[in-house]
Amino acid sequence: MKYNDKIDQSQPIHGISYCTRCCVPQTMEGVNFDEMGICTACRSSEEKMHIDWKAREEQLRKILNDAKESSGTNYDCILPISGGKDSFFQAHVLVNVYGMKPLAVTFSHNWFSETGFYNLQRCLEVFNLDHLQFTPARGLVNKLARKSLGAIGDACWHCHSGVGSFPLQVATKFKIPLLVWGESIAESAGRASYSNPVHKFDRDYFNKVSAKLTAEEMVGGDVSAKDMHPFGLPSYKEIDDTGVWGIHLGDYIFWDDERQTEWIKKEYGWRETEMEGAYKGYKSAECIMPGVHDFTCYLKRGFGRSTWQASLDVRNGLLTREEGFELVKKHDQERPEALDYYLNITGYTEEEFFKIIGDKKLSELKDIDLPMHKKEQPNAERTIPFVQQLIQKHLNAPDPRVKRDAEAKSNL
Ligand SMILES: [Zn+2]
Image (cartoon, rainbow, N blue to C red; front, side, top):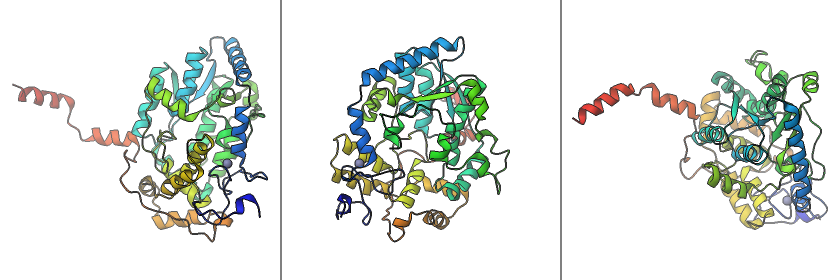
């Protein structure tokens, strides 16, 4: 019997193994357990404690200085931002610590929450950033959200793909070689390690890891090659000609989500909100749909966002493993309110949604009934895109002059 085969009643799902240290299940993509039953991410976090962060910081300073020296009158680097907590921290480090002049670049999923919309605008204002944003049309987003579910098993292909391709398109078109991302992938995905950060630039990284299908592979049915144009990647030659490459700040700076979040809230006015399926208010706060994304992960793999969050908290000594499991049961297993919006824009019935995702369930979970429950109260923030809320608000509102004149009259 291996370490993780012991029966543990506190586990959220019975019949699968969990890391003996945190809350990571065997069904997480790319995860491996060592002979002690400890997962890759727990091992990476130990590694993180033994890294010479001072030496790493010097490497970062050199990279950024070199970029500044060779950029001439152009931007020093590209800063891909969503308005999330990492965006603020990246902007702080680049602009206020190292004196860089980045070009901020946003691929909009067109699902901005009200808080997320505020955060992005606040980020641009507070760090004084030039900004380029691409927003796919509502009809295209809806069409891709429908196709995405059956194609890759979540609703978000357009976002996975766009956040990879748009910054690269801007890098090659504007001849800005360096891209600066936030969190290290060693921690966020357990796919790399700190001792071996992926320095080699991989044009197809986002396709392989999150989008799964290329823009060409998404063509078919009511999705045309013309629809897919904004999602295409630059050619290898274009990337070579510009010398595009990228770094993750988390490979050079000790990354601490909790402390960074507290700090950017206080220092720069970043705001959290209620996140469906999560017990923290800061992950993907820019979007109304993460609850649906994480719920599809739960239905396929038996875990959602709270498993990530609890695992991190357990590793950092903020929760016991059992407390983590309790939070996981409460939040991962909750049907998100944003599912109503998703069904509305895609035309799927709830039964169709569960059928499509059910077919993608991992084989080791096939015989397991995944527990599920309804939300106890409505979401604190409306789960329709903020721009649509804004349009609805103004569409039938009286002309502001009429309102003013009426008020003036009533004050007489
Ligand atoms: Zn672990």
